[in-house]
Image 1 (tube, rainbow, N blue to C red):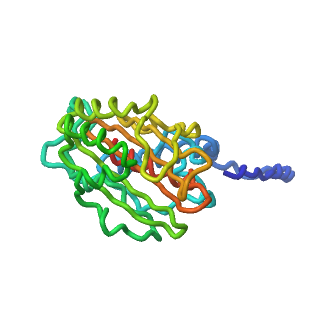
Image 2: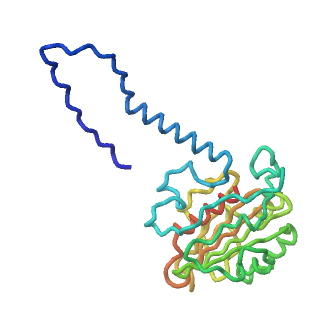
Image 3: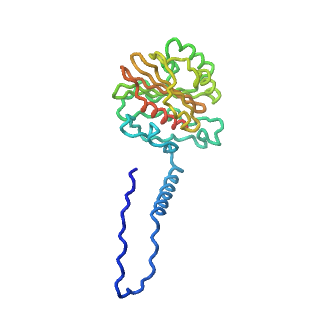
Amino acid sequence: MSEQQTVAVPAPAEPAEAPAPTAAPAVPEAPRRALRAVARWTVALLVFGGLGTGTALAITSAERTDVPGLATESDGRWAYPKLSLPALPAGAPRPFTDANAAEIHHADLRKLLLPAPAGSTPDKVLDGGWVKQERFLAEYAAEDRDELAQLLVDAPPRHIAARGWTMPDGTRARIYLLRFNSTAFATHTRDELNLGTTMQLTPAGAEETAFDTTWTFSRAVKGVASYVLTEKAPHGPAHTRLAYSGAGDTLALIVHERPGKKEAARIPFQQTVILQNQLLG
């Protein structure tokens, strides 16, 4: 914000020799700081009053320039539509509330998928609907798929929903949401994947991945923990970034893959992760 300019106010002229008639005492002008405070509180009350009945999403605990989803327009972020939480069945609580100790997502899983940004070309297969486990397994190197398939037999997901799109620069984005029968099954899967420690499974087409040290928003959304990886240099025919987000009974896999020599851009990837986490939180 620009600094507020101050304007010097000239002192009043000296009174004439003949005293003017006595006027009613003037009402003291409220200090500008007090007026600004009243205005701020009025706006705050209106905003919070609106949020009490709405479902719009926002990040309010971080500075605008610190959060990829709220950064400046010139940093390459993608233009996502305004997000809103889907309706719930009558009487069903949202996850991570006192009334939902089991951390269950009662909303339609497909409606919790992040929508595609403006300017993207939708994936005809990952169109926001249900997908089979085989499609999810195809995201991993062939030598790792049997191990992961067995893991999903031991702790089978109830549903898998997915959406994908391609951006004008060639970046291919894919999001998978896996909902399990309980938070315990989802946690077991996260533990078996060694999320947060070594992460043994390799994405299809990637040479080697490592945890992204630039990611500092692991707990930016209540109830959601994220683990972000990036392909090490030198990368193969495409550069891959991926993230896992655990949210109660649901596990998300988020992938950005950019063919060619350039890396998949970091800011729009982290923006995608944060916004998807908001929908799950």
